[in-house]
Length: 354
Image 1 (cartoon, rainbow, N blue to C red):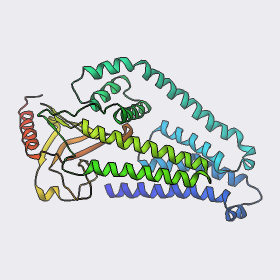
Image 2 (cartoon, rainbow, N blue to C red):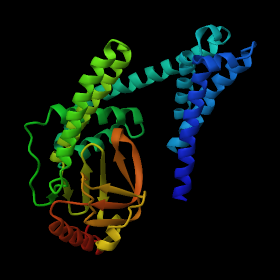
Image 3 (tube, rainbow, N blue to C red):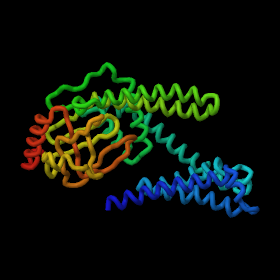
Image 4 (tube, helix red, strand yellow):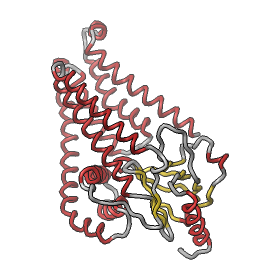
């Protein structure tokens, strides 16, 4: 079933690329222009439907995320994209349709701006809640945001970006927790060194590509420069987030995060069993499993696998939510970690924390 879903998602992605690229080639290549008929009305209508209807449906099938609001946003985006893909002289009879996309995007932008103002208004109580919480910042901040804006993906994405900039620029004087119930995830690997190497590579690539493209395509060089700067900020924030947020085992819950990329709260009453068998741990991890493993150049395996009674939601990059049935964990002090987790799980089964 999982393989079938992946195959459908992959097929949708390739069809999406085919729809967009074929429409672009049709209007921006000598072959495409020569194949255009004298009466372009049908061709233009077909391209508009491709970009505003077919492409959004394929995108949703690729992402496996279906939402009416999301579909409307993608339709409007497709209409705007049509203005750039289809030459303006061909769109003279379809200007009202094109402006419809701009209008929808404008309304959505105004709506998102209103949410932004609501967020700014609620910043003081959110910060107050975060400061009063004993949880790691990644979790206390997320809880505070969920209380104020439980069903606002735009706010969650924005707050995820705020965390990235905070860890990248505002945490250099902070030290990670060294309490007995905390466990680091990266010291048995060269993960942070590997991240720093990537940052160096991006810096070198940025300088080279910007110089190379500056005289040929100033817009492309600026876009790549912005994307590379964003990537550098993300990697720096991710390193700091990993250092300053070790796994924490409380009496009734495990708070585990891996930098800014993913985090999860696991209640002991939701754990079905703990798998420690080396043979099982060294098998291929299924897609229903989330990994909290620092990987570098060497092949490594989890220290234990938590089998959950039912799928639990994890927060991924940019606030994306996804549920997982199993959790694979590798820590720097596995023996102590296993002992504490087993003790807490046994107490949870006896009903001490319920």
